[in-house]
Amino acid sequence: MSLRVEGLSIARGGVPVLEGLSFAVEPGQALILRGPNGAGKTTLLRVLAGLAPPLSGRIDATPESAAYASHADGIKATLSVTENLRFWADLYGRSFGAEVLDDFDLRALRDRPAGTLSAGQSRRLGLARLGVIGRPVLLLDEPTVSLDAASVARFAAWLRERHLGQGGLAVIATHVPLGLDAPELDLGRFRASPRSTQGSDAAFL
Image 1 (tube, one colour):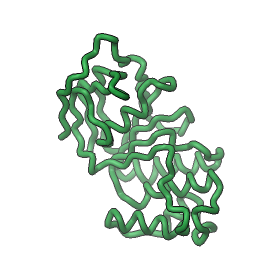
Image 2: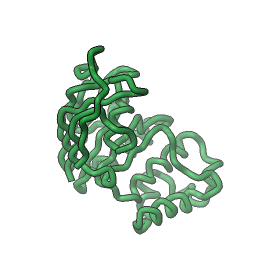
Image 3: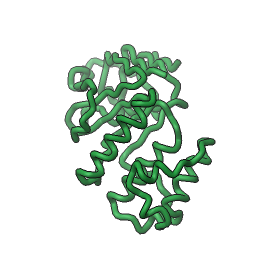
């Protein structure tokens, strides 16, 4: 599964923010999105995930192949750590392997209600969800928010070895170095001009 984007233009709140965007990410690769706040990183990730329509252009990937992780952790406070992960595994028709608890340093917390976790622990649980749903395309919006340095390193190792190393791909908006051998895409180069139109001529394949 690869991700290819050609001539993509997108809007936020009806206002064009990016235009003429083209790139490709192959299995085993990551792409790092760069740009200041408001540059369109989150909007681009949401469009790639199929959560918002593009204005024009072509996205060669099915939204069903992708998992989008935003600042929200996507966990249920009344369920334990293990129950949260099992819920997501069942929802996606996947088996739940206990190794994900070790990958995200959650084994000691496995029976804790998610509502009692710290911000960093909740974030690790939210990211561990990605380890059980098995989507080949990860679209990650500031995934290391609330993580300490050790947890950032642990997540980067999982991303490199478990996901990219097994043929997955990722597009990541982050200001934190993850130690990945990945190209960077500066979205400032694709800022929409005031003359941009809002007509729709887009395709998902």
